[in-house]
Image 1 (cartoon, rainbow, N blue to C red):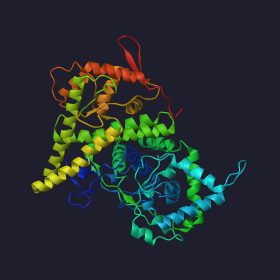
Image 2 (cartoon, rainbow, N blue to C red):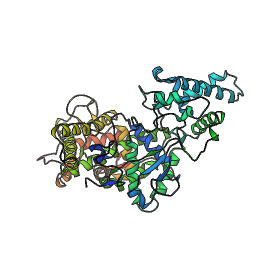
Image 3 (cartoon, helix red, strand yellow):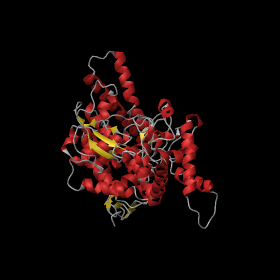
Image 4 (spheres, one colour):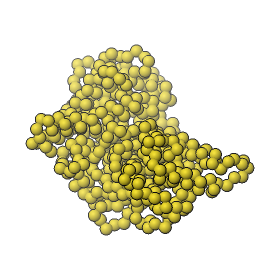
Length: 511
């Protein structure tokens, strides 16, 4: 279904901002994004006010819109920029060459405002020292921001107030800004995509489609879970709100028409074929979010989970669309530092290569479909661009998450580090529940087409998802290594010589 998108009409092949990879895998994923950018962008969209474009309805605070119109209408969302807070956190800890005079003046004014506002009780310290302690506390929640300017930095999304939209300080806009007006915070480009390059938007649209076809109650449950997760550190939320509110009050920003938001963004589209993953993604996400763990750890694990789910969506669509048997993820479970099983390594690398080949074949199929009259030069250019924004993205993020090994050199293949293994257990097994080891392997295959054992490789071959191998008994060693890895992580215990169980030991957030 190459030409079927959700929502319909959001992308057209001749659009200036469209590309073959956008049409095939969703508009648009770029290598600059980190897993935390995916998470922050997704949560920013979820928590922002939204409305259906070309519809008379009012913007809603609901995290997900359930309406027949979302099938063929784009959705606009209006995140809150909170530039005063963002400037306070990041300006003093950023590159000198990107600091404009207006923002230097605004930063110093914000510090002065806060210095005059803080009350001192038992311990008397210099006011500005107090401010810098507060600034450092907030800055301690920074995500991977190396080399970014202050206006493009971000925090781990621990509360709604720090869900900053991406912004660029265009020279022409900053020169027009005045410290005496709201232009201090509004004269930024909020509609460019570099780090928040719509990866989180693609994940949001996937969930939106799934929830519009899900059973009753799923939407309400997921919205409740997301809001609860973002309220895990209420003290940080109060501090952030206090800083932004003090800045706005002093600058008289509250005199503005609050019905006219500064930041307006319009979501694009994803391939309708992502619906193959609808029921799995909802189940995995709601099961994971029910786990009661430390808020920072939950956000960190979720950032991994979102990337894994997007990778699975893309891999499935590429394999199904190209009609190749490169769909499975054969996992090499050998622990780092231990002697490798050469046969496992060889087969895992072969399956990884087939996975990438399915992307190339699907991209070529898409080029032939959408651009049948392209000459060879244009085809090669489109193929390279699409490869950079699909295969190379997966390689980059996969290696950063230690899901793809080795970091450099040949024989790339999938593996499962402890962090990702933890997400998989927490997203597949409900809190406090247990399943047999073999049932857990079934779940990994059913949800993520993850293959570890000889039995599941044979199943993949029978379903045309893997190449035929005359003998894969060596995968039994892989299976044993995986059981030991689960045991080392505290998720597996032996009941007898023949039976082991995998258990989710956490309690429910609902308790």
